[in-house]
Length: 620
Image (cartoon, rainbow, N blue to C red; front, side, top):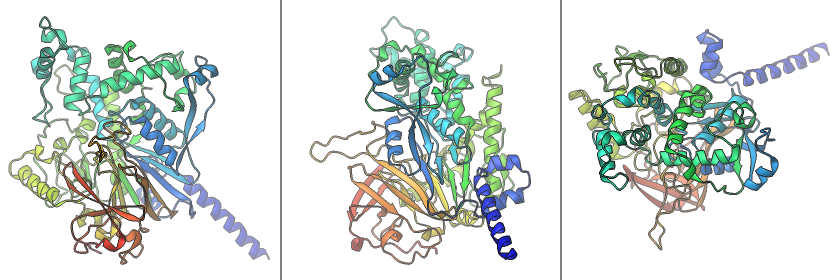
């Protein structure tokens, strides 16, 4: 009897211990910050620290880029996130005002036994930058061990505003402000002003110096150096909205920043009419300054709570790609945002003998070092946000460098990408990559890396990840048609999921016009990417949503590590047919197929018996 009681006590003890282990921070950097013993860190990830519960689930979305309406529908579909009504404590906003505006205040919450990863690129393409960042940061603060925010290029490159829109920088001669070094086809600032002068916006009496304002400098930066020409007006719209709801913007000590309201999210029940004409260009410029430079700015807070990479069980998340060039590589913290002065590395066989960074063999330590790189870069930015007197150095240069492929000699986990033609591999992309590597090595030209796709079939990075228990990569960054593009784990042993569905829209058959349900940049499609299973190391990929033509779809991939020899059901997903199409989703009992090249994407629909999978590339 005593032995039975003792056994029961032991079972209770170990169950309690398992719950504590699960609750322990699964973020590599936080864990390493608390414990310096790397062997103990490694064991944390290589054993099951999450509950053996069929309800285990990870939710993932990336590249929302300020499309607030898109995010609202994503949450509505999500099995991980939900909105909870939140009492308004702001004295400036009465309940009657709330009702008259047709809104309620809600807070973003996380369901039990779930985790959430936001894959980067929170801003730029819609009128909800500030609201999205606030919602995500609030979620991270409430669930610090279960929510992970990643940085994308669009998050990091806003660091430039501090130095390049400063009063001192505005005194620079217009001729000194060159086109972006990574895009020889972009306009210089002088060319931009000359074009403005010739347009109806300015009369002949205006000189270029008259037009050289912070607002115009910002418009040029957004359009010609950041690829988001509509962002200035999107911000004007969001400011007008926030001013109407909260009574003031930017936040001050006696408005909503001093109350619980900044941790709440406005959920639309009806559209709120706003007058954007009252928001001046100066207001817009001040908003961009506030959100990145003020300690409580929405984007500043997002970066403060974000990571470059994270690992949850058998899955690693980055914004861009893990390939032969980026694997093991951590850039030097003295990296600069410019064409590199250092010689190129060996692209064929990456070596530990490099001069512009370090190589780390253990995947978990690599993730930790990348995240330390981010934290150190942010500290540098915060300590010296402006140029030095010689204009040769500013804080945060290393962070600007890692989000720019030429600066990294093509070794950026933030900006490298698998996507091409709506899928994760095309023959055209393979030829472009070979050509780029040849040009980079023979001509010492880092610009060759702009726009190329990583080799998703490369066995070397797959074997590196598998050796450390990683069997799935989830990324965003570049569009992949109207639903996520997946490489089945049957090819290399590692499943790859590329999630961004921006610009996914189709022409109406009768009118030939394109619809834009979520806006011109976002398109019509919406996707829900989740990882579900019994625990963090035995799980499956689930993808559902709506295609650009309005068709609902739902796809369940095989469990990682399961037998995929069969060519029926979910095992067909993520594979290439003999005639060059990729099987992407199940919609209306048929398979949704895709192929393309560059930005051209084609779609097809086939029954299961009409899908013949190409086995030539299967490695396992």
